[in-house]
Length: 244
Length: 234
Image (cartoon, chains in turn purple, cyan):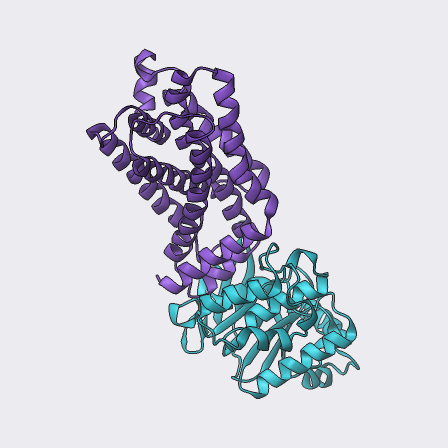
């Protein structure tokens, strides 16, 4: 692996985003819009304080999953992945290049949504801003890693886009956002315990409730990071130098 | 390349090919679409899973780590980022290869894309896109260039210019393997492999092939070889 190739890859991905104004506007605009809608749909500050932070964890996860699965599928089908594999590019250079670029995008995304939420929408956050941003970026990287892995199983962009509901919506139903996990049937709760989004959302709830770093939050962060690393390793295994 | 066999989709597409390419030569791969030219080139670059046989490139097994800066490869369908400009694409690939600073400007000049250097690739014409794809392969001055149909869709003037460039590169010691299905291009190579259905029909200098078959042009030579092979008991 080489730092200069990793950074060149990050720069290239950011340049691609910079040339695509509509995608860039949607990456930042859509979560902001949804947050504003959520605030006025509930119209109860207490409820918004409870749900808002969880969505702050969900948006980066969801968006990075979609963006990465489509972007890497394009690299695979467009021949650029094969070209990079004939060059000195390491698999890790490519993965870290993506992680760095999308990590930066997430920082901007979460920054804007947070700014709107804390000022205009009056979100009341018990925990620290830093831990919220850290967990949000981790959630984004988790979405990215899963998207990268999922893209290996898609042959077309049609299929890749449909992985979003297939991979993500079941996790969304089970993660405790819609029905608290404790109220679920025990077999559903057991399933939710092995799904990564559960920890992403739970980490955000911990931050919304407790001012200090709790043990539960530390566990959530460790689990999210663990899932991310495993998904990245599995994703790296799907980047092949030789194909049939 | 020794006794190369490749199976794709459950079917053997290359049936034990062997040949050598001398350094600084332009080798033409000629044959109808589907005859295995691309598969052969992929094996040379080392991205093709092969059944058996050995491919040695510049003294190392094809696809080894040490070759990744020494071999340039341009696929038939352009492998560039359509949402970046020509320069942005080249800058990225140049930094991946660790190519010298001036290389981006040099290759843009060599393929004649000076006027569209800042154009986003998606807006290029087919011929310009092909040349952008070729430019990436030229970055870092590789010792072996593997070019899959680099002149498709170009007008005769540009085609002429590119063949002059290939000749110039070969004179500087670069080895080129260039595929084509246009017969009149084949005459510009030093050596020609005529391929059909995963086999090498003939291997030799274009002039010698014409002489041997008694045909006026290579098209005729090709036909002669096919009928000759069909007629002989094998």
